[in-house]
Length: 217
Image 1 (cartoon, helix red, strand yellow):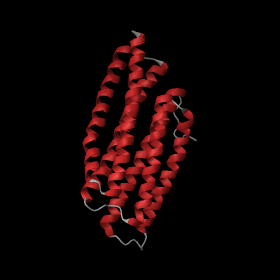
Image 2 (cartoon, helix red, strand yellow; image 1 turned 180 degrees about the vertical axis):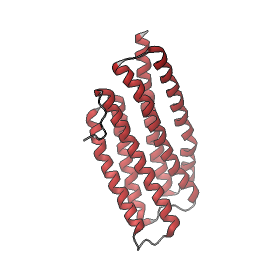
Image 3 (tube, rainbow, N blue to C red; image 1 turned 135 degrees about the vertical axis):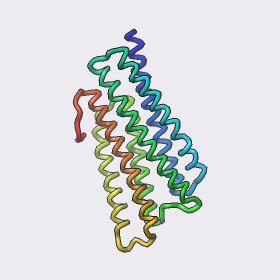
Image 4 (tube, helix red, strand yellow; image 1 turned 30 degrees about the vertical axis):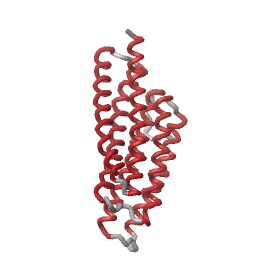
């Protein structure tokens, strides 16, 4: 029975990795759809968000059953408790990609990103992609070194977010209020997704060490 239980724990980790890869693909596709006004790609991201949501619900239900029936202790208990939090963070990251894709769809056939901001948004997408790539390894291998690095990567995202906001509040911004609102929302989506990734990294640190740190540095 204990072997079956640990197989179930391994399956939970595999599901979290699968969810992370889905989030990575959704984020990449949403960014491409946003910058190129690709309606078909935006629709793909929007429709596939339901898959991430359903995976979260199924994973959480399975985790709760294991908590109730196996009475786990020590690291096994931490693994189950953290999986509930991690799946919620991944679902929110999927939502951020979904919101980006919806904004791409809303402004089609135009793009909501004017030329002055396109490089910043493109860089935010690139940095978030690197963060999620590391997150796959962190979850799969429980890699504390990469978990620590993720906070540094998130600092880069924060810098890009501040750069974007500063350009929007400049008196020289030429594209009006609607464009500024779009970009404010977009910046928030990328920044929040990175924050959720850091939250997951903190939970992996707790899972491995039994110690939860507010800051990984």
